[in-house]
Image (cartoon, rainbow, N blue to C red; front, side, top):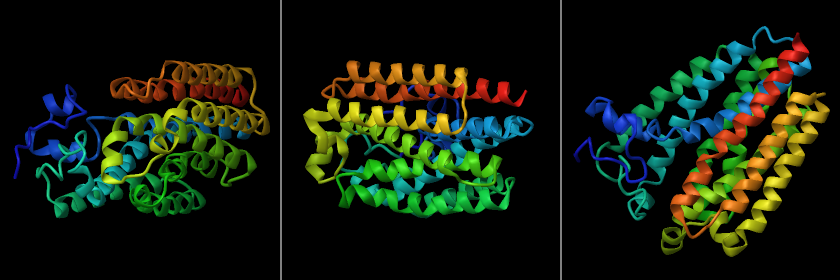
Length: 310
């Protein structure tokens, strides 16, 4: 067994490396608690939909409770998804510079130990899910199919980011399922907008590994778009803004939500203008900045929801 304190190459200087007990560090790294950005990005569509659905219902009585449960659920289930991803990708990860120091290829955790950790996280996620209505429970369970197949997509399609979008945007449906007990056209359009956003930001993320991916035969939209990435981002980010805007129209959103959408759109424009796909460190920073973009949109939707409920 390798040194449990050895750090993951692209996640240094975090609380897991400096404060967590040594025995827990490989498991926290498997769940990406040393790199919570993915959990935040999974959470954003959940919070967007919860706020928009609350505005439609004009009842904010359960909104804070739902926001907190979505927060817990997003962090736990993203951790479970990453653990599953690391189990299935352990051989590929060992061949990529940025990922070979992850717990499984580094020998810090065995596959059976990782599976046990996966089950524990899934059980916590199930506990959160069971706090909702039956329709929401079934909707949440349905997402597991997409989560299960995602790690294999990079082996068979140039568009694994689409499948990631289907998984990471599922929260856009969950807010409606939890709050309204249904998934309507508004929810579906919001879901589509979120998928376009995910394709955009994960293309930026994938440029960090484009060279290694080419060597080992892993497919991605980063490799597919190549030098045309900026033009592709214009398309997908524009789709995201337009579709989210349509969902807001369908949902009767008012001016605070539109301010949030304008801020969100401005941030995406900044990302495209700033991006240099030949600079992995910059790609990482811009990818991380999508949490801020998502929070801007959520802030507008939240204010709108509270105003309409009041």
